[in-house]
Amino acid sequence: MKRTTSSKEIVLGVTGSIAAYKACEIASRLVESGYAVTPALTASAQELVGSATFEALTGRRVITGMFDPLASPDIEHIAVAQRAALFLIAPATANIIAKAARGIADDWLSTTLLATRAPILFAPAMNTNMYNHPATQENIEILKSRGCAFVGPGSGRLACGTVGLGRMVHVPRILEAVEIALHETKDLAGLFVVLTAGGTREPIDPVRFIANRSSGKMGRALAMEALKRGARVAIIAGHMDVPPPEGAEVIVAETAKDMAEVALSLAQDADVFVGAAAVGDFRVQNPSSDKHKRSEKGLEINLIENPDVISQVGALRRDGQIVVGFAAETADLIKNAKTKIKQKQLDLIVANQVGVEDSGFGTETLRACFIDSKGTVEELDLSTKEEVATLLFDRVSDLLD
Ligand SMILES: Cc1cc2nc3c(=O)[nH]c(=O)nc-3n(C[C@H](O)[C@H](O)[C@H](O)COP(=O)(O)O)c2cc1C
Image (cartoon, rainbow, N blue to C red):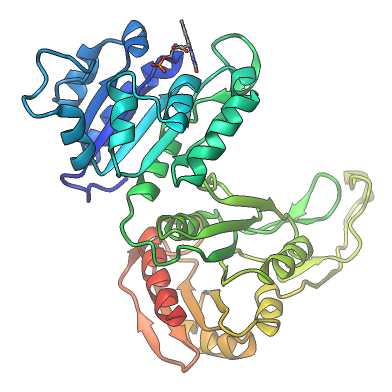
């Protein structure tokens, strides 16, 4: 996370789950990112973790109760409720979720959650049965319907020894959800953004495939940017080296044919479609159902052309729908991209240089330019994939106006 948030205050509500120890790392990472963090521990949380750690990590007095003699002279829960940019409840017990849903105000945190108009983000942590209980599920639905955000829970081994849903998600996921919740521009709110990401894999036999070097980092950055701007996001994912961001729907499509099928189906409802995946141009005509053996003494593979996913989406586009493509080129970047934008009927194409050290598959940065349907070329400085994603959705937002 970048240090761009200088003085925004986050109230970190820590409740009585064994995962409370992980809140120390959350506090530390938020402070490192430039946020002012006010920790508030419920009575149960104080049984599990100590205030002194949070005090040292955040440099702030930890709020532990409603009638704390050290509290500031103004009515603290109202003052904090008004100035906070976000309430992050991590871990969130079944109890705090229930109290927030029903408006119960019997301690500092639950009272302040009623008093605030800031966004609230819950990271639930509890035993699987507690999480699946209809009461908890109903409470979560109530809170979601009021605009509260949830990150997780995930699945795995729980402190109680069972394996299942209920683990608090990993800290990086929570930090990502904080970024999404705090992003000020929500210009894609109410819109559905579909994007392809990663690289396709075309089977040769059950154990081998033809792939490419795409890491999925660009697709991930695009998904994250669209989520931050308030869109509902679906990622049609080929092979990705990086995890998709929390909050995106993910549909795995390994081959170009699978990707085309899912893309054409989802594109019908999409307001914006971005084809960032590296889709293999060719596939093996007759993949073997048995593993090829060395004893075959040589192997000839016949390749046939794959569907061009973004062209098919471009050809079926609806009025008002925005379709964006990526063109990875090793030479004649702009000339080739200008041909592609016409052929594929796109609104915008991101032409990017591949095969150089600082730009292309797997790199953190990109040498790219945007070309619109009128042929206007905008060359970008060497940019991170996150910066390209921001600029791209700025252009998309202009096109949607
Ligand atoms: C060791 C221990 C671990 C607990 N872990 C959880 C948990 O992960 N999730 C949960 O909802 N409750 C858990 N509980 C129960 C809560 O602490 C209990 O419901 C408490 O009333 C929650 O209060 P709070 O929401 O005000 O913090 C745990 C209790 C103990 C003793």
